[in-house]
Length: 387
Image (cartoon, rainbow, N blue to C red; front, side, top):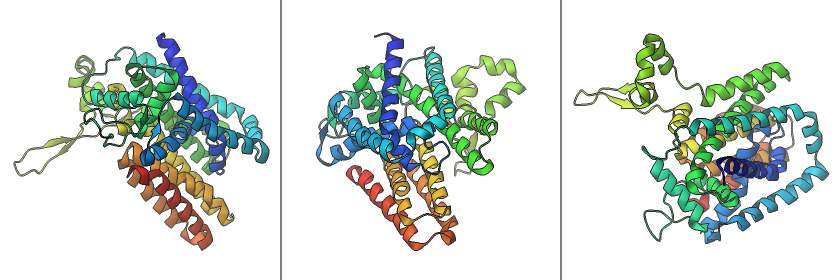
């Protein structure tokens, strides 16, 4: 197929995953102004793969287009039935059609824009890219879960590879080879993380300042830009100091690599100083690094959005039963992060603890107990099979 056809099929696949699971996300984000519209695709990809991931790591399960489609259908059918019969989902979408279209336009524009940018340097070479492609290809061709280790025959991957499995699922459904899926995964990560970051800023501003359309839109654009595009100011400072030298130095010798090594760690016994890795999303997106800490960006931002939703549920008067779904959503998000980039889990757990402590005097024990039980149970279900 042509590059355009591959990109279109890929985008349709990730969109269908989001569409299939949106009623569940809508139910879990009752206190977010956008009701999860900005994180619909990260949530969809994760929710479709999560049952296969959990079952596969317990007893093994086939990983092909049929099992992926079956997982999506088993989530979509009851979700849409409940959303149609027992909630105002369709009415909410109708009232907020402009917001939905704004997020959709932003997503497809960022996705296509990154593919054009990546098209000038599509090589999967240098740094850790060969390793990342090996994991992705292993997941694409495995045919089962757990996925076999590409270097250690007969053993499963001894790594957090949920992100690669999610992208491999799109590749399997759309029948796109790994070398193409690699760059499409980068475009997906960039677009979904940027929109999720913008949506998080949109929701926070709407909760703080009210539903002011222009102000909320500005917050969304600024939030997305600062998260994945802006980077640090090292490049700008270098350019203003010496524009010609900065431009002519190139990526590896100039502002590209040096921007991710701006801090020096000194005080070693031999008197030397060493550069500390200070990478940021824009650096990784330009480099084209599909490492777990990159591929998990959309799910990390999704987790923060779910934490905002949970905080709002805690501070508003509600029956203890209203904590079950938000708590379970946070628990599943922790499990997703554990399997995709374990280093992100302490950030979410610490934030969850701070939110709980900050609202401790405003909630009763049944409410707190329901939250703790739902979060612990969902986390256990998502984490233990892969632990």
